[in-house]
Length: 379
Image (tube, rainbow, N blue to C red; front, side, top):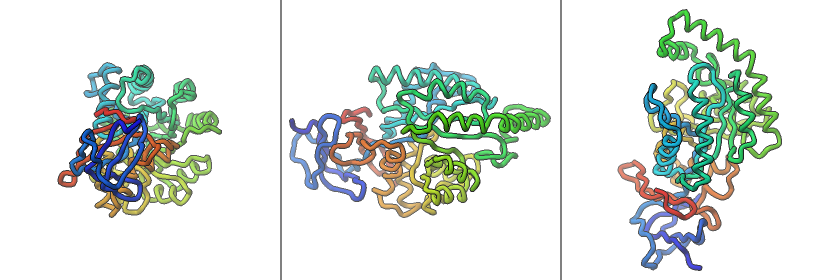
């Protein structure tokens, strides 16, 4: 059988070079890559655009933004999932790790509902073939949360579970190492100064009570499994040492340069937030991802909360860190695929999945002009 889909007239971004040639797809796989143009009349003329692998997003809570487009306006869950999926696909993200918060620290009780309903919607819509991107499950385990264990265990054997991260959003650690910023967060929620201090004391006590127990629950349950483990918002050398000792091999969004570099020295791989790059800094005042990139301390980007940020951050990396285009694209394709153990995607090579994105660079901005997953156009 001949190729069912052929691309020509553009630059194909391989893992080590660009090829000005043509690419053929048969069924769901890449069948051939040629250095010359195709003469088939039905070939898709890329008109000088790039053809890159489909993006792989290891961490996105973009669904939460669709569920709560306004603080007091909750959107129907299934509709929110469809909108979230469409935003990922049009951004070129063909593999999505939906990152659900498991455990409540008393701030956003609605997140638990988003988690439970979101997984159900993911399962139903995926089984019906109605999602444009492939959706996998990423459980973000809030270690100090009293309800974490009860929420985590029913999903620990889920067929789509591909990543588990250990996080701690208590005051004075991780993302909230600056306690005054944490106080500001509470004040914005309308708490009085007395209520703020009471809340801080409660959070610290809760952490002492539950963190170690919940950490062992997760580590014990995941021991010996292929599911990838990550840490979240590492701040100190002690954070990295603890995680490395427990066999965790991914540091997700380290919040200091010291933590990121220590992770690399321990053989861990690091994920940086793409919005941090696009915005020019962290939204919570932590280390700049651009600085991490220049220091060689970034292995992959994740969208965090803006799917379109991934590709833009990758293109910006060619300037920020003087990376070649293949090196930059690998930050959102090949590297996250390898980190997650997905050997069938992330690169353009014969036999791999035909997850492909057509991109035009316009005044330095990447514009997605077409997306194919398993050889079928989805955006």
